[in-house]
Image 1 (cartoon, helix red, strand yellow):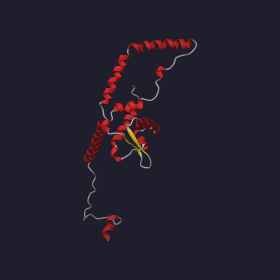
Image 2 (cartoon, one colour):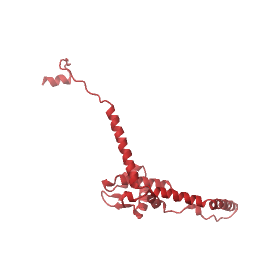
Image 3 (cartoon, helix red, strand yellow):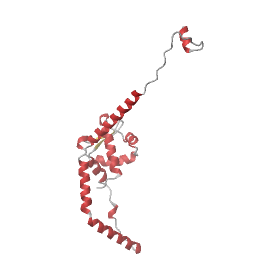
Image 4 (cartoon, helix red, strand yellow):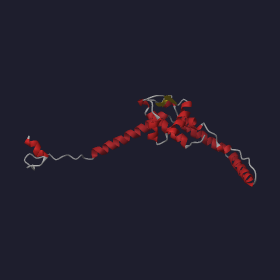
Length: 190
């Protein structure tokens, strides 16, 4: 299993969905704006996520997607497996051909095959470690971290606003002579 941009975008979209789950279904159009990803790309990803039971779709006005099960029951590995399970790997492509280029290509294929035979256990072990690590991270834990980070940013922004003293208007002194064309003079004339 390879970790690709598709997997990263899917995880980000699912975190977005999990952090907004109390607001009802989330449309892909609004998620597209927040995630800066095209709606068609999200449709493709959410099709895979829906087939794996990770999201549910609601049609019609006010429709969108919700989590298919609790955020604590969805791991990052579940999301990655769902979106990465489709598609063929081009590494196993047929190298049949004719002429000197085909022989050179076949020689390179044999060299790659020799290298692959030397280290498959390493890559299989690394893949297992990555997926075990991702299995231990739930969508709920990530959404909680995002919510805490957002809250800390809001607290810092509020503290910054409080530190900047607001300009206050100087009170107008009663004894001060107002110019005749002043709005204050107009108010006193009434």
